[in-house]
Image (cartoon, rainbow, N blue to C red):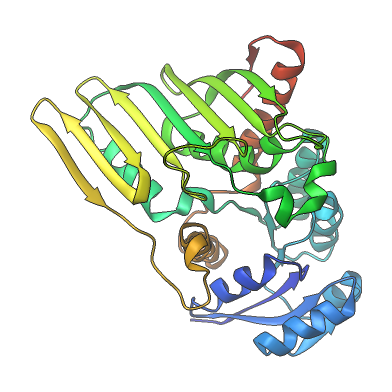
Length: 342
């Protein structure tokens, strides 16, 4: 198996976990780092024994022989770096959210298509072990057709204390967490036909919304509600867990707190627990999220090798981006909006 060489663009907070997750997979080697503040890249290079450091992404792409780049920068810079990699004919993995606007996301996809290079989106939330197990139960056929679903990510995690810049965002929770949760909705229930959204600003001193309720008709006609909040104090306040319920013709399946999956039919309830795998580099409090990075990377790596298709390509993630901005448009006009899915 030929070893794939890659570079990371961006050495902020999440890059350490992304790089550690790549190191769990065979046949891939990180050969260069870019960051506009060179000292940050140098510190990360020492930590992970990366041989080359750059503070100019153009120079990195010109000097290094790469099989792909992993872009882990702020969302505002994603279009520029994706287009730069495409110009060098280097396959791209880009973090979510894909772009600040739907138009920029569409341009990124078109640019990579024109250059003939893959554009893959690192959307890891759907790769959590418990969510994957929930999906298998939902699709087993034992429960029949799903008629109603609910996804809840509601907690009181002090996100603005940890990341003060989030207070200044005009659009917050749908663009940030909604990108994850709406992608999970698509993964579990199919494509959205229409969307209705209500938002609230509950935390004092913030500019954007920190609560959103999104209602969609998905797949063959399933009503799906997504509840997203950083302002909720709940009995089961278990950041970063996501809770899911699906009601079907012959029963229901629930992803409950502490990774319990409960399937209920006329014969009773069968429960099993699917906690996340643990890695030495992962924060145990974030294990569900950190471990899903490894599974997501493995899927994208398989696609780059030509072994298996990627789930979250640029074309696929455009559908999530349309949902995100469709939700904002619905909240602004107070109406249900149709979602085009070309």
